[in-house]
Image 1 (tube, helix red, strand yellow):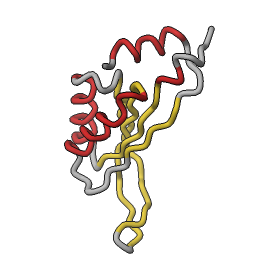
Image 2 (cartoon, helix red, strand yellow; image 1 turned 90 degrees about the horizontal axis):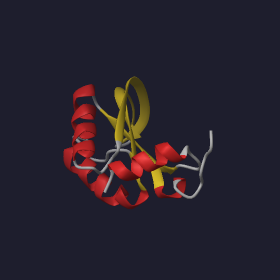
Image 3 (cartoon, one colour; image 1 turned 90 degrees about the vertical axis):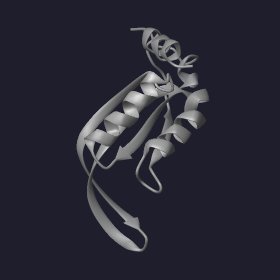
Length: 112
């Protein structure tokens, strides 16, 4: 399978943790409907251990993996903050190094 770096430089995968499946699905569906993400994968049953307001916390969470254009990230992050119940939601984008040309084209076609 051929891969390409050129198109990949325009794509990011965005990770967002959510308190439950309902919130994850609401965020994922809104972002896909609004063309800020091509796809939202919802991965249930995570356990997050983190420091918050001076305490160590342990909570169940759900991960949403979003595929989008790098140029959509700021709008996507703003929309996640509007929809998310957390004070400080985790919104982290990682660059896509390489990918199949058809997949990369689909992400670009599906986002604005």
